[in-house]
Image (cartoon, rainbow, N blue to C red):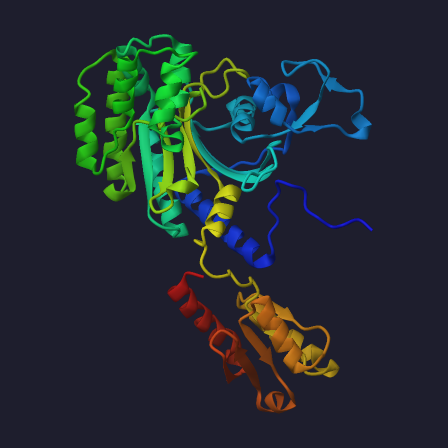
Length: 465
């Protein structure tokens, strides 16, 4: 006999947690749509030559390739490498988006506002809290030829709406601009683009690894930067603002500088002003000059969102501006800005930290008990009425001791149990047990659905569920 077990790196939930996870997905989707983003889904499998066009060796080692017995011997000989399987599973949603926009460019209206909430797959090393299959929830705005920096300001408003409704605690959307950082590095004598990219990656580790680690790396072998330049860089990237006015003052303090610095300051100032105009409270956003994002394709505004009371969780939402999304697939210039929520990892971390609150219960709101085999038709009619009123209802299809039926409903997280014995039927009544309040009452059959709806709406108003 084979022992049943889930593969490592996969999150499999029991129904109460799955309901909580699904509700988070629903909340995110609702807010994405509220801001005018349109749904897109792409296949879990992409052509290897498309998926791996601009990946590095590390990414390629994490990719799951697909090989069916019917496709044996057929391999891709494109950019991804000769002899490689024709298909691979997506490792993020950005590369599939680039392919999607390039392929459907002439059918889309620009700026194209898309959201995508799907699983992605990576060959992560098996360890606690790291997943090989996980949900990403992305939004992007993609322009044709150009895209105003004003769109960069809209995404923090979306982030604020999402996490405010999720109610997982106070959070801060941290903003920076890579032009500003590159301009500052140039002023320190770091003009080489590749070296700048390497320094950006190290600076991005400041909050995770600490100042001493970054200093040792930048002054050590491979970088060999002067200690004085590294000291100035560390002073620069430690800048944090504590209010809107403070953020603007810190930008003003940078002075005129070179062209890249001026562009970065100008863009960040416009983004900050519009973030406030969009109604995001000052307490929810701040400058953080260490935020760089490790991916090289970011070119301007960058974001990271963290929980104020749980910094150890790390970024719960990140993203930024890129100048040409689909350069490998089309000659058109398609600049964009986007953010991503890694929901599987976030959910796991919130659950581990005890931030998800009580169990989500059940999606079933009422159960109709069965007194005896002859009562099934009556039970089905009660259930029909409840479902017609929008109440999710289960029927006990086989009669058993009533105590066992109550026990089942309680264990399954069902709030209401309705039953009609001979006495209730003779009087046109239905008995209802409210397992949440531990109360029992009778209500006319004609009023049953409206009564339960009132109870459910009152509870939803108090608890949000």
